[in-house]
Length: 73
Image (cartoon, rainbow, N blue to C red; front, side, top):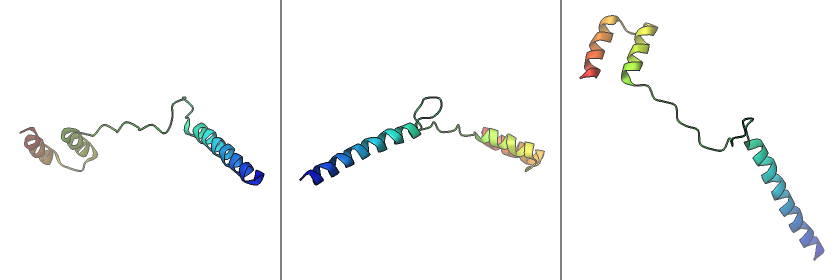
């Protein structure tokens, strides 16, 4: 009988320890929980992507002007 009770106490204490240690790891250095959902990054607009492609040299100025007029319509 005492063996079953001791095992139950062990499980309860082990569960509490697991929760406490898990929560400690989930806290970041700034004190906020790492388990909260992060904000999604801002998505680039078509104009921003087009500007970046021109800057990287992926498209020519003629292609840039053609696409720019199409996305502004």
